[in-house]
Amino acid sequence: MSTVALLGAGKIGEALLSGLLHGGRNADELLFTERHPERAAELAERYGIAGVEVAEAAKRADVLVVAVKPQDIEPVLDELAPLVGPGSLVVSLCAGLPTALYERRLPEGTPVVRVMPNTPMLVNEAMSAISPGRYATEAHLALVEELLSTVGSVVRVPESQQDAVTALSGSGPAYFFYLVEAMIDAGILLGLPRAVAEKLIIQSAVGAAKMLAESDEHPVILREAVTSPAGTTINAIRELEKHGVRAALLAAIEAARDRSVELGKAHDEA
Image (cartoon, rainbow, N blue to C red; front, side, top):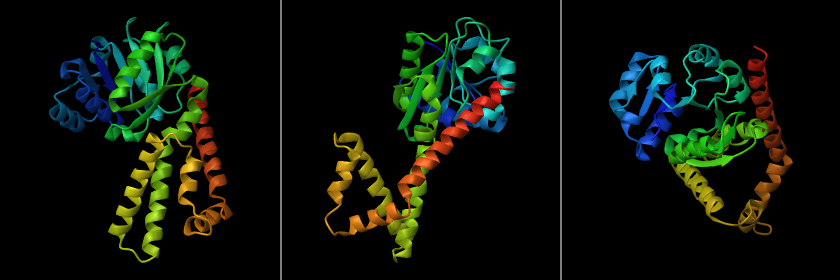
């Protein structure tokens, strides 16, 4: 079985390490790099996984998962470039960064798979979209699917769609959190205690998400089932439409897509 190294052990990196362990990987098949010694010691003790330097990770691992912030990618690639071997697979979890960036900076022929995960990876409910670079094969994609399936669902998309994926599911949890936050505030405005409002809305969100996931019905049909003629829900929907909530969501997701494109271009031009 391949050895996997996480380059960057922040929340997403740790979530993937934990998921891989729970998915059946042995601790001796996993490595991680972390520039903060205290954090490295904490993770090593918690999971029994070795924290190593980048050079050691590149030497020992078959799969190098880059999980740093996009703005920190340049020094990581500088360090990796002379170390990546011909059998290494590089998996990028960095938002907005194209596979071409890695292929340009790493040895000729290095297979790269681009991934857009999201933060529900922390509870093993991630939505990850993967795209092959120029040299990635079906076997590489299958391996990445296997790894990521330990922490949620995986879909394949052309890399040209990754900026849209970033805007929709990559940033998507934040939109739901924002909506839940507003609904809790509304409950408080209507006189409910905060704790009660939180329980009502969070469980409603969980239940609605489960209905969406397990039902074959279109979201419109599910919404209409709650919307009685001349009832409370249709009055609420009217206000949402009056205030342009649907249009605001469309514009927000387009703005997120545009920012993802900008991040990629910034590194292309660097």
